Length: 384
Image 1: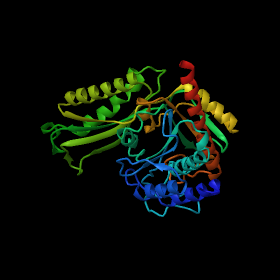
Image 2 (image 1 turned 45 degrees about the horizontal axis):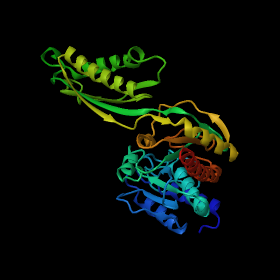
Image 3 (image 1 turned 90 degrees about the vertical axis):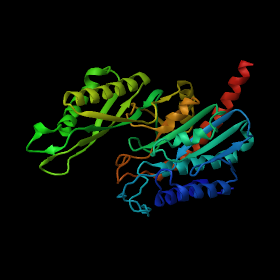
Image 4 (image 1 turned 180 degrees about the vertical axis):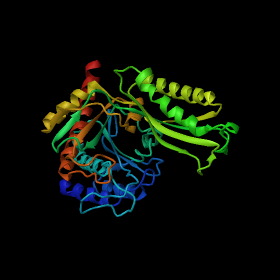
């Protein structure tokens, strides 16, 4: 058993921060977590995962509650002013997954200490590839979510101070999709555009037209977004190229809005290309669905936050994405936002968290899991 959990996870947080690994390459991270779980006496499940790991505490029987963290980092060269900066050039924990990992590790240790009182099972998921994206699907494919009754997760936020927690029922984060469109034309000398088909002009017309998807085709009260983020075409000053590439992202908060955006973008690409006698090749890359928190579990999330002394803060929905939403296709749950002190935003090279938030987050996740197991048992008994 770990004698001083608070100090241990603080040290492990620094280790994780110094040794970041990209999505689905978290080999060293996974092995470190495995060693940590073994030190804590946790049962480690034998699953077909190349990276990532899952452990259990409790009876091994129903009800089963899961808590999840993500373990991967980002391809960013760190500039944060911390003494435990990344030792891997070009790789950094710029989204706080090191904080998530250490906090949930602490929750696992706290749950182990309380194992005798858990009349059910808590499954602890250290998930790879959230930034991949869609590492959650790797976990889902193992089947360990199939018998879970509820699942809980968290994300650190530089928008809140240490001791504050953001809680939001319903749509909390957006569905995330990407599009890649190649406009095929006919290359020709720039002095004779009439002899070719210009894909740059075609792409430029599309970029202008696609701005109307949100402003003219979507409900103005719905949260939706279309952003073109990359355009590439041409290779010389006096040559009209054969093709031009355009890519970007869409965000939406409902299944209907998500499909409507896709339909409109595909139609605009095809019709704009036709108008310029070009051809559009569209590739759609679906990401996670919208993260919609279950209001039923929101009651417990708030109750535990109050019990643990957190200052509950209302959170506005975000058009950022989170692949935790894939778990909601299988099981209801709740996702909270833990304040880690104001800093540069997530995914910034100077992003950092205040380690003072680590242990309170561990305590919260452990208590939430225990209370959820007890509540499910109670609700089950009342139905009998």
